[in-house]
Amino acid sequence: MIITTIYDIMTKEIKGMSDGQHFWYWIFPAALLSLLMALFFSGIPIFVKIINPPLNREWGMLENIQLVIVAVMIGVSFYAMWTKGPKLQKLGFGLIFVFAVFVFLEEIDYGAHFREYFSGERRSQLSILTGVYNIHNRGQYTAAIIKRSVYFLMLIIFIIAPYLKHAIKNDLISYLIPYPKIVLTAVLTVLVELTARLLVPLSNLRLENLTMDIGEFSEIMVYYVFLLYVIQLAFEKEFIISNRADAARK
Image 1 (tube, rainbow, N blue to C red):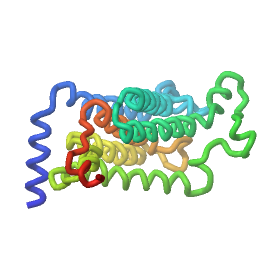
Image 2: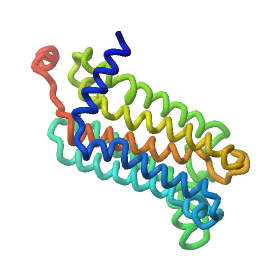
Image 3: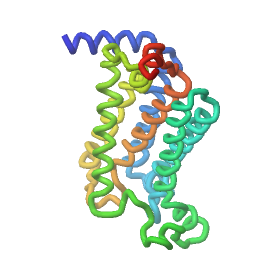
């Protein structure tokens, strides 16, 4: 029964998607990640360097594509925060904006990446004050714990929740539940992670010998699926508080 319901929901959703939605929800990210993995696992030095520069992997395409996606998320959330009417909605997008800025700063080590690239000196204001370049890599297991927590959150929001929307009566929760088409992108994120790790032994590489985290491929998809979610909230979903809720508050 549950499997049939899931199948019916996804079938209806996929049939209702426009060509543009198919492109942005799975064709574009699948093509982009296929290209990036093809370059990296080709073994051709110049292509490998484009993806993962030996001097600093933070200067490579993987890391900078992540920055572009997060930067777009910052722009979308700021625009929505500025233009939306309801105060609660403004607050929500304001929180997303602050968090996206935080993630962006974490990814560039608060400016240390750019400073090292242009001057050769790896330093930022955070490193001067605290001795560390970012928060998410502080401690042996911090990054791994954060990543696993994010994947669990994605499982709840992007894979499970879309199938429960019909049973939700609360307007706010219903607004926060993404459209089922985002399941395509979430599943693609998992496939990218598995494919990248499978290609390591097939290409005679060893994870411990890599100068980069192979999970950087799927990290692009993590940021991308959250960007699609923010776009849904900002431009596709209507924020409505029903009269029932208003009456209850009175």
